[in-house]
Image (cartoon, rainbow, N blue to C red; front, side, top):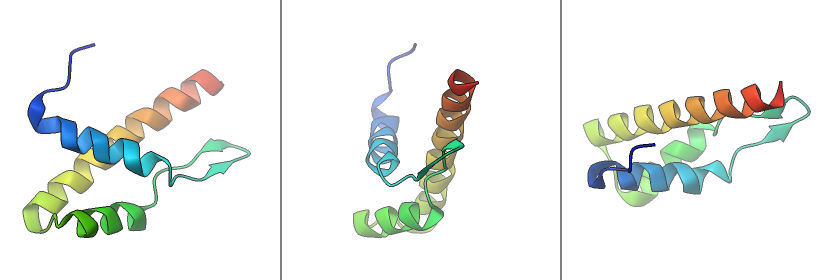
Length: 74
């Protein structure tokens, strides 16, 4: 695995912080709620195009995480 580059470490840290807000169901892990990501971005003062980029990247990380968790579950 390639090490994180300095520019993407804050996004990965945000993903890790937000992962605790995900729900777990009988079917496994659910996605991080959109509202939690928006609240985090607002709390951090990330707005405009930066917020859109962060939102996209966090959701991509979350999707990859969910794929891996579900793959292991099956």
